[in-house]
Image (cartoon, rainbow, N blue to C red; front, side):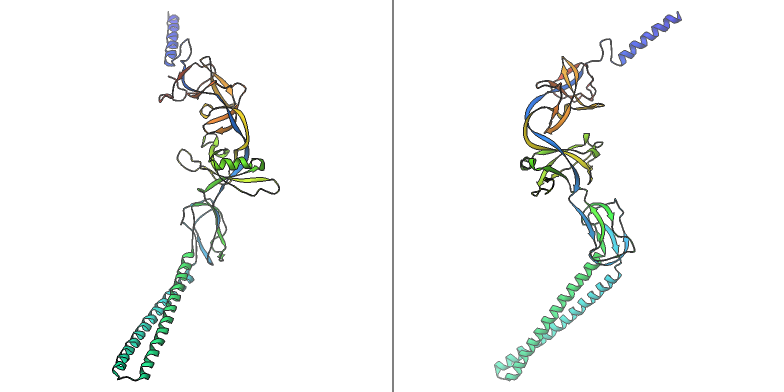
Length: 393
């Protein structure tokens, strides 16, 4: 009896496991999916060219004054904000000169006040003599001397005013020299290299650090002259360029981003006959941080200007597998696998090459992450909020 009980128990456990896994003798239930049609479109062919990310702002930060460096506030690779202190020079002599300039301003101001008082006295004396002359009680010579004295006082007043302006200008210059002893970042960026160190004498114009902006980035690619007109037209129309950046593939799916043409440089290289194209790009991860870095290599799909007919599928239909990219299509109510070669993107659709896809076929665009060939499908009219992953219900 114990052996019979053991068999019954094993059978019950098997039925229970099948029930828990939602499986029976008929296999798993159909997967809830959303489908989209394969289309054939007349498109402009695109060719891949290589390029790199570069910074629009890359500057050798130099000193505007000479002096002994007493502090270096950054290291290579540090991020700095605009206005952050990069280095400090010894400002003792500069402050002494500044204090002397302040004293010169005070002295010029005092002279100016004295000249004003002297001019006021001379004008008052002249006024009294003119009144006496009107009454006939003053001589001509006294009046002429008073007028001459006023003019002399006015000349001294003008001289004092000019000396005060000059002293204030020198003070402003000395104040700027003190400020320039502290070298600050003119823009936000990352320190690429240090050109000076503590204890080094820095001359006017000597480089301190090489600073590269991490926000003002762009793509630079070179295209053959046969594609020049098409690239210019794409830029004028505001069309997007698909970019594949391998370095960020772990942060952004497949490292694919889109950019817009900023400008096509008008002068081709005299040897290669290639035109440089600047493309604006911005790539951020799920936390909103910029994932791009200057120097990253990339591939850009550039329009050639040559029209052709291509099979296209929704970008959501493409699934990455161990053997490459594939799409699942509907075959008699079940899923079937079609390997593809991605050619280029056009908006939300992708031109592909596949020996199995034809215009009008239906491919899965939602619920395809956990499909496998032969899985039954339950077609949904539109995406459902309760579909997660493969859409198993």
